[in-house]
Each structure stands twice: as structure tokens, then as C-alpha cells.
Length: 340
Ligand code: NAD
Ligand code: DAU
Image (cartoon, rainbow, N blue to C red; front, top):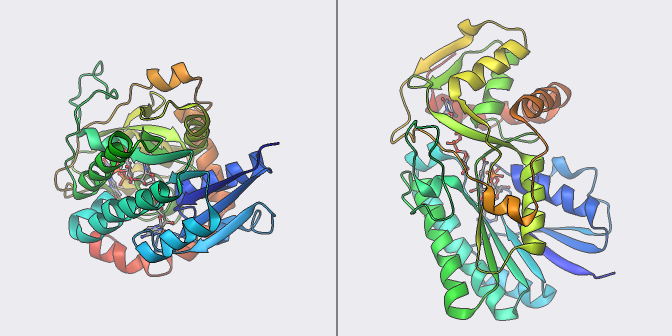
């Protein structure tokens, strides 16, 4: 049995948190180190079921804190790094871009230096389809790994910058890397500032749902469990230096997503309120996942099965999201929207 030490950054957040649970349960022979600063988006209560397991470890640290990160790598000698930690919300990047550059760009570079210093087997950088910019509404156009990077928001620009630095460490220093670029995720523990959990939590509280612009922007939704399986595959089987797009052909307009949730919960569409559009709002994202499928990945959820599972999860885990929306999140919501 091969023992491995895997550092997962951002493992207290939405996708990183699901990935940590997936890996701790799937690979008892791997030691999973969850490194997270516990910003507003990170919480450890989600790990109650695994926190006592022998192969789970937590480290509170800032990825941009060079001395701490280098010492940690020298002490633990990780085999793999899977890097999720980031500022991830587009709207926050529009009001406060600086932290996005610090965490997403500078933080990634610190991790790369530490990985290079000790010599690791693989660094998987979890990126986003937003680095490709936007597509028009022609349903036959998709993002492939060859699509030029053309990010439009401060968030996506910071992610594209980090992708380029990761690539450069492979080309210049031979660091074994992969970059994954995934479409919009949804599922358990999705922070309620994002469209799907925001809609579910507000519909359940009979509150208005803010839909930006005309609601016709399109996103390509992927269940987070399918994303976790994709990253596991890329970590173990991905060819070093390669980029892999992750998506499952689940395009929906924002209005369709909101209507589906309202209908499933048996509420009225009068809850929908069209509000001022997001600045620089990308029209459409859609992934061509052929390259990853050729590596052996296939999603298990359709949008219909995934959204049903997700709504059920939010119904059964009210305590988790209610504790978030009753805290400092309320101040953010009031600043961002002017709704009841
Ligand atoms: P999230 O905001 O839910 O979680 C981010 C985590 O990173 C939090 O736990 C936070 O505490 C931690 N973090 C932030 N700054 C840190 C720092 N300086 N040091 C250490 N930890 C820090 O994000 P998410 O939605 O789970 O996204 C995870 C990754 O996946 C991001 O890199 C994001 O760009 C990418 N991604 C997200 C989606 C999506 O739909 N959510 C899709 C594609 C790619
Ligand atoms: O495509 C991958 C990206 O998906 C990730 O890289 C990001 O980290 C993640 O946050 C997500 O970005 P989006 O901006 O697409 O997700 P968000 O949930 O913020 O918005 C989804 C769509 O819904 C988008 O077109 C804006 C719209 N929207 C969003 C909010 C929060 C609304 O209409 N109203 C809202 O209140």
C-alpha cells in the first residue's frame, strides 16, 4: 500500500471541503492535510464526520505567508498539492479586487516556490472556465483547452494570472503540474452568496431572489461530487504540464435555474426580482470536456438529478446555512443588494 501526503489548500471552503471528505474516505492510506486560512468562506463544522480520522489533518495558515508555507513544506515533505484556496466570488472582486491579486496570484506563487523547493510529484492547480472570458449564445461554441485566455472580471483575471505562473513553473523549472478549468459547481456546502444556494435559502425564507439583468446569461452547471472525481483522476493520471477542462454539458439560463428551484420548492415566481446587472457580466460559459473524458472521466449527475439532491441537502442541513446567513454575511448582502 503506497502512503502519500497530500496537501489540499482551501479545504474548508465549498469545493475543497467536498474534495477533502472524498479523499479522506476514499484513500485511508493517504494523509490528507487541509490548509486553510478560514476566511469568511471557510468553516470546519462541515468536517465533523472526518475530523477524528487518523488520515485527516488541519493546518490554519495563509497561502501568501511565505515563511510559514516554506517551513510547513520542509517539515511535512508533501507528495502532492491540490490547490483550491482562493477568493472565489466575482461580485466581491468587483468591489474589492486587491485581495484577489494577493491570495490568488501571490499565494499561488508562494505555494509553487515551496513545492519546487522540496520537489513534489504533482501540483494540481484548480482553476476556472472564467479564464477563457465569455462565449456568445451560439450553442455550438464551447471552451476547449486551446481557447485563448481572455478574463473579464478581476476574479477571473487573477485566476488566469495564477494559471500562467503555474504553467511557467512547469516550463522553466520542470515542476510536475496540471491545471483544471471547471464550470460552475453546485452541491452540498455551497456558500449562500452564490446563485444556487442563495436562491434555495431565500426561497425557503420567502424572500426575493435578485436576478441580474434579464436573467438570460448562461452557466454550465456541474455537481461538486463529479468535480471531485475529476480532480482525483487528474491528480493520479493527468499528463504533467497539461490543462484539463471539466464540465458536463448542463447549460441553463440563470432564470431557468431560479425557476427550477422555485417550482421544486412549490413557491411562487413572484419571488423573482430583476435587479441591476453585474458589471462586465459574462454572457455564457460552456465547456467541451472531451480531453478529460478521454482520460476516463464521466459525470454521474445530470442537472435534474443534481439540483434535486442539492435542494434536498439544503432542506436537511438548514443549521449549516442558517448560521452563515445570520452572521456577518448579512452586512455583505445589504451592501450588495437592496432587497427585503
Ligand atoms: P470558496 O470561496 O468556497 O472557498 C475558498 C477557501 O479558500 C475558503 O475555505 C477560504 O477560507 C480559503 N482561503 C481563502 N484565502 C486563503 C488564503 N490566503 N490562505 C488559505 N486559505 C484561503 O471557493 P470554492 O467555490 O470552493 O472554489 C475553490 C476553487 O475552485 C477556487 O480556486 C475557485 O477559483 C475554483 N473554482 C470554483 C468554481 C465554483 O463554481 N465555485 C468553479 C471552478 C473553479
Ligand atoms: O464558472 C466558474 C465560476 O463559477 C467560478 O470560477 C466562480 O468561483 C464561481 O463563483 C462561479 O462564478 P459565477 O459568477 O458564474 O457564479 P455566481 O453564482 O456568482 O453567479 C452565477 C450567475 O448568476 C451569474 O450569471 C450571475 C448570476 N447571479 C448571481 C448572483 C449571486 C444573479 O443573477 N443574481 C445573484 O444574486
